[in-house]
Structure formats: C-alpha cells, structure tokens
Length: 331
Ligand code: TRP
Image (cartoon, rainbow, N blue to C red; front, side):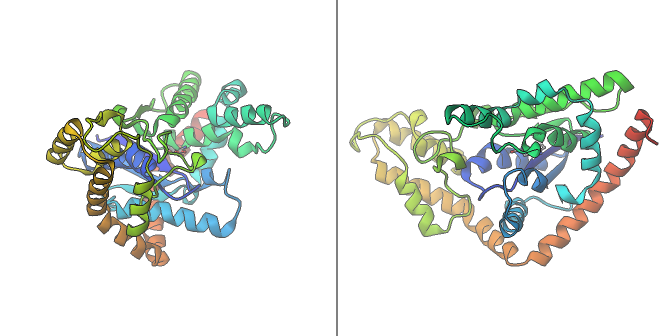
C-alpha cells in the first residue's frame, strides 16, 4: 500500500515565495515519488475564519487551485479537491471536537497569538476571535485523519497543528481501538524559514512577500527591493547570510548554486546578484505563470477538475466515516 501524503493551503492571500518554497515545493516533490499517494487540497473553509468577502473568497480559492495545477500537480495521479466539496470532513470535525480538550485549543498558536495581540493593544482577550479560528486545529485534524495520512508536508508554523491532530487521534484510538493513523509532519529543515524582502520571515502579515506569480516587471522591482548591507561589490560576502542567495538556491541548478557561492566568496555586487536571481526565477516561473493565468481565465475548467477530485476523495471518505460512526454507536 502506498503511503498517504496530504496537505492543504488556505485561501487568505496571494500565494507567495514563502508558501511555495516552504510547503508547496516539498509537497510536489513527494507527489512525484511513487511510494506516496498524494491528497492535496484547497482549504477554503479554513480560509473562512478570516475572509468574509464573497468575491475575495472565490478569487483566492480559485487562485490556490490554479497554483497547484500550474506548478505541475497532476490531478490524475493525485487526489486534488476543494475541502468544502467533501462534507465527510465536517462531520468528522464534530466527532473529533468531542475528543479535543478545550485546553488543547487554548494553547494553539493561531488563537493564542490573537489573544496576545489583544492583550498588548489593551483589548478584551477574545476580541475578534470567532469559533472557527478557535477550533481551527480540529478541522485540520479532520482533514488529516479522514485520509489516513501518514505524512503531512507543512511549513514550520503548522507543526503544532499536526501534533494536535495526532493527540486527538490517539485519544480516539484509545477509546475505540485502532482507527486513525497517527500522522507525522514533514518539513524541509534547510528552508523552514524563508526570508522576505526585509530579511524577516516572509509573511503576509509583515508585508514583505514576493508573490509567486508576480508579473515579470513587478518581480524584478520586488527583487530590487530586497534588503542588502552596504558592503562594496568587491568585498567577500557570506552566501548563507544573504536573502538573495537563499532564494537563488531554490531556483538554480546545482552547478549554478556552486558558481554563485564562489562569486559571493570572491565578491559580487548586490545589483548583479539580484539580476542573477531574477534570471533563474524568471526561467523557472515563466511557464507556470502562463498556465496559472490561463487557468484563472477558465473557471469552468478548474471547477470540473475540482469536482472530479472531490468524487475521488469521497470514494475514500464515505466508507471510512461510516466505519467511524459505527464505532461510536451512531450507526
Ligand atoms: N493550516 C494550514 C495552513 O495554514 C492549511 C491546512 C488546512 C492544512 N488543513 C490542512 C495543512 C491539513 C496540512 C494538512 O497552512
């Protein structure tokens, strides 16, 4: 039996390089490995914890679907779907909620960080916290456990959520016997934090992102904005301390990376380094960007792919949910 690998992306903003390098790229690499059966999805109902505008939700959600496909996810090989099209996930989510200690949710970082921000700002602790945000990890546990996922490729910030899924699964299994597979997270250690334009972690909340499918000219402009130090072109530079180099190595070939390392140690002007970064990125992203734009202009095609994917997904989730319901005495 193939190992199940599963991951989702929630539509809350334009997909940026941090998302791509930290989560999407490793997930796509696993999908190419024949040992794994990938289930990759658009976590639209997770997005609803934040996005409360109809058009924005539609557009962002399509954007995530188009991104997966444009980067080469093959919907014939993978199970590729939109979370909201698989109702069994939400039924399981309730069941799991009844096994999730409230204290565990209190400690979940997405909720905790809002509470902390409220404290700093002198607001009431639960200000702007909806129950979707509070129970976010439970829905994510349902996503993971319903597909018997063994491996969950995620960015570093999602490790805690995978651990919560594991805790809930253990608690259920303890009560009803072996039912859920215990998932493990998969992160690429070397790229677990992708620096943004200012050198801090690339994140929408810092407004330091480079959108993955930014149009050529704008991409070039953004690259030119990357923060550098004031060393002169001939001074040796440490590639491992450079934002430019850490992005460069995600798109360049092994030979190019080696060459760039040498240039850094003998001295390279930041302007030239930025040019080289733009070149490799443009080469790698030009085709996917075209495909992305095409897909965004054909919502019907996207819809058809997603609905077919949901059918495939449900042929697994329906019987498994039934089994679970029998175990708890609901059927
Ligand atoms: N919470 C994840 C994120 O913000 C998205 C997500 C939802 C997810 N369900 C998942 C990731 C299940 C992995 C597995 O990035």
